[in-house]
Image 1 (spheres, rainbow, N blue to C red):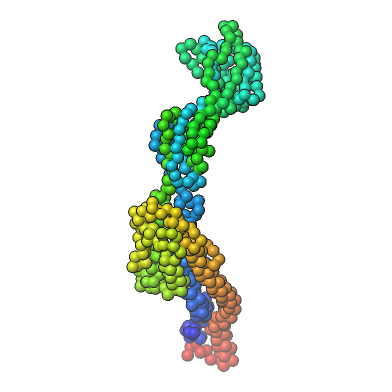
Image 2 (cartoon, rainbow, N blue to C red):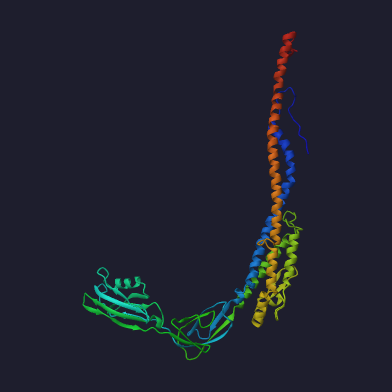
Amino acid sequence: MGTVGLSFGSATSGQGFDVATTVASILGIQQGIETPWKNQLTTLQAQDTALSTIGTDLGTLSTSVQSLTDLEGVTAEKEGASSNPDVVSLSSATSAATAGTHSVLVARLAQTSSYVTTAVTNSADTLTGSLTLQVGPTGTPHTITVGSSSNTLQSLAAAINSANIGVTASLISDTTGTRLSLVSGTGGTAGQLAVTSAITDATTTNAVTTAAGLPGQDASLTVDGAQFTSGSNTISTAIPGVTFQILDTSTTPVQVQITNDTSAVGTAMQSFVTAYNTVVADLKTQEGKDSSGNAEPLFGSPTTSLLQSQLSEALNAGAPTGSVSSISQLGVAVNPDGTLTYTDSTMQSTLNSDFSDAVGFLQNINGWGLNMSSVMDNLGSSTPTGAVYLAQQQNQSQETTLNTDVSNEETLLATEKTSLSTELNKANEELQSIPGQLSEINEMYSAVTGYNNTNG
């Protein structure tokens, strides 16, 4: 520890010394004990930043692995096509669908029941009477009565719609006038409308009757030899996981083909390779020096060595499934620098020839995918057993101890500053009072001896 000297010139000068500067110098030397603590804190915080980046990128890598191992994820996605989309149009094929070809023959389309009334020449004419509506053969009849304040075609349509009886009413106009249109809210025979009109145009005394309509009709189709009927032309129960629309009748079967969405699997594997290479780059960076020539925060860290070895080993782990025994068959090649390269054509070839084996390699209990997922759990920062998580916790513990030491030392120095300032201020007052005391002594000496030393 260094020393501090007091500079106050001649003891009899009365100029004293700078108390604040002297106290700061003394405490500054004592604060030197904090320097290694603070340097260590800076190092630990730099490690925290590097670990956080690696942890985030490991999280992205883990997510990419999960997309490949999820039983209902990309490997379960399906695509579909119709040999005659003018007759059968495919809407969707979910993961519940099974790859294969289905035959659909459409005999009849579904039809929704509807009615229109006779025309009212002037839509603003006053109406009287009532209209009774029934939806379905066993439905409850509902009577809409024309009121005194609601007695036009427009208000009658509004009353029907607000009654919520499963019928939509609207007005349609042509050269003969305006008609009330009634459409069932239920398709097929289950939505067959029964309409009884007792409406009269009070302005012209003409009856407003139901002039025309379409009957409710169920669709009829054959799927893979089985007969189906439906009140809707959108069919979602004939082929598990598949929804399609029938648009026209056909005399020859339409082929609906459901296939595995291999492109989605390829995209997911490319995402894995990209995420893996990002982590490799993170770890590679920590092996060198920064732009100032200083070692990276995790240089020589056992955590980075563990991550590198575990990830490398996991690439070649996993029990074979049928014809697929390595990730190279899924288009993934390991480069000399530890990064990966993905070739989609290789993946597509394997998926097209051995889809179930490829999926098994990713998703079987001892397969490559689930093994990689397990390794990720043991390395990342999202689980309490992950290597990055444990390293972060260790750093936090050391940082807490160091911050406590620094805080305690600062408290001690603050107390010492107060004590030193009090003592040195007193000493400074004594030094500054010496000239006055000497003057008093001279005066006393002169009074006793008659000698005035100020004159020589």
